[in-house]
Length: 136
Image 1: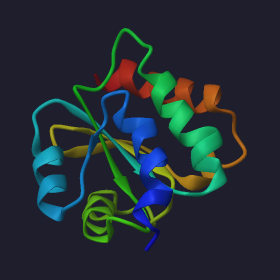
Image 2 (image 1 turned 90 degrees about the vertical axis):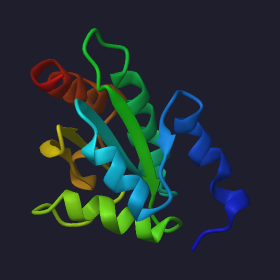
Image 3 (image 1 turned 90 degrees about the horizontal axis):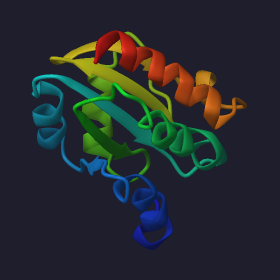
Image 4 (image 1 turned 135 degrees about the vertical axis):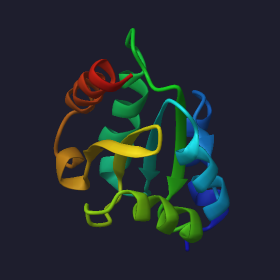
């Protein structure tokens, strides 16, 4: 587990733009069950989360169509919430960072770490925007 003071700015990178932080399994269940579309970002302390994932997720919201709900769980910190979120992402293996789009509780789009690592934030944002345009 990472110290709270270390991850605080990384959490705030998403919560400051409106992502709801989920820290329990129950909170994840409620978020996924909501009607409409929900983007779940599995946040991380790694460099590709800082350089690519979080900026890409934020840029993706600059789109006519976007998810009804945006939430985040933090790998290495909120174990219970992350495990629950990853359970909804099966058959994809656990990875962080990662992003999943759900529609009425059903997984409709997934970005695994290998889709994020080494790719510019703009490309990640475009991938998510394409998913929003199709599903939102």
